[in-house]
Length: 460
Ligand SMILES: [Zn+2]
Image (spheres, helix red, strand yellow):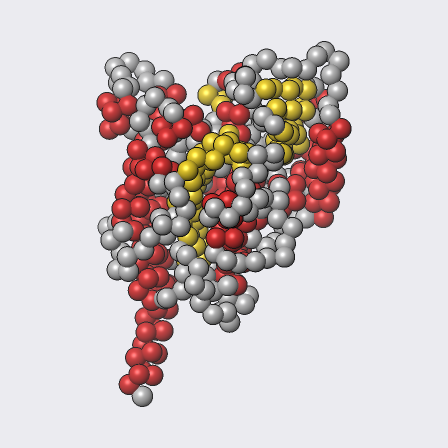
């Protein structure tokens, strides 16, 4: 009897604790999750940083020490030197990471367009295998209302405002606010459950408008007299988010149950800092926005190594499912690296990666054909050769040798060049997917969302 009462009390406290501490905006038990047994899989922390160019990460050779904490993570695990995103835009890329589907397949091809409902994803599959799942997002474009990503997590926590203290609001949330929320969730979870967990944290820094964090200027060698350039401010944003990540990783070592989770680090896309005549991301498939950092750290299970074969954030879900020992009969577009990481299979050096670019965001009440109207470019990388076709207005066809010309200055195409048959086939597949998405409901963005998307530079 005492045992039963204690258990009831524990269940009650768990429920109250979840409600008070994590305050999820969405808390939807995923079908089957409550019925399944706790899995023996690893705790997983998925960390993504918005707008982080690979060449500004010091572990990837940047001369400034922008990312000492991320470097430590990446150097302790497997780091991919040739990782790219299927589309250089936040919600499309993150939808692809979670579902291992290309944007034209999951439906969120532009910010403001929701993913198809009911898709399988890393978090929903892990939940059906006994995992507790939560996401903490700091970019407005990932709001469930406009991205449709929330349904994939048991707790989907949108962190856009600082916590309220003494009746006062202290402005927009920062990386520290996200890690605080995530850490509280982990502590509560560890106190109340023996289930493994998956959490995803998405930081908005260093997204434009590139706030200047003066406290890092000296260490980064940035002169603070006069105007600080956008590029330098961007670097201080990276140092700021890196510090928050380091703090978060350290705190995980001091939890009530010492945890040593499997940690994945990635970016949703890079940033063009003036290259090819533009600032920002989304519009083109050049490497400033396509090439991202990607690493996986799991102490004692994955040896430190650098993998130079082509990789994609589409690979994250199949790889994590592989490492967690979960087999799925799904047509995932990414590659499962778990065999390679555990020394059981060969590195695939001949992979082809496929890419697409779309207009930034829909405006207000979009049309049902907002997806078809947004397609700008398709691209394909094979054997370090990148072919890009500008679809919009039929302008532009480029072929770059990424080994000899990593900045993509000299196209190898002639005046009368025609896209390869393989790229045309890819274009047709993308178009078919976009046309099939006409059946999805048209986007409806409220005024606040429009303002936020405008502030982020997605609406002219
Ligand atoms: Zn982004």
